[in-house]
Image (cartoon, rainbow, N blue to C red; front, side, top):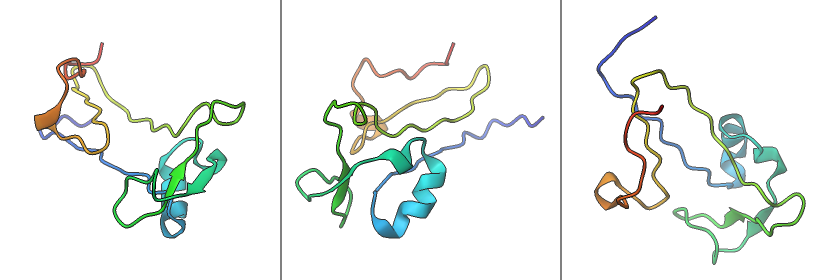
Length: 98
């Protein structure tokens, strides 16, 4: 067991780009089931062109998921893309997980 006061940061971005797919597939749940769309209109990654289509149909209701392990007393925060701690909305969960 390891105790530390050093906060760790797990920050990843799924780009869906072909060059990154093998690495991203190992980091996200349901990555291999994603229906990719090659349209810069929907893409929000730097110099990319792919995004995931979620149309609400049977196989397009749920997007990627990522699981991280936290222990009692840990603080966890999720930031939407293009968001920094300085631009958090007031209702964002920032306290300890219960």
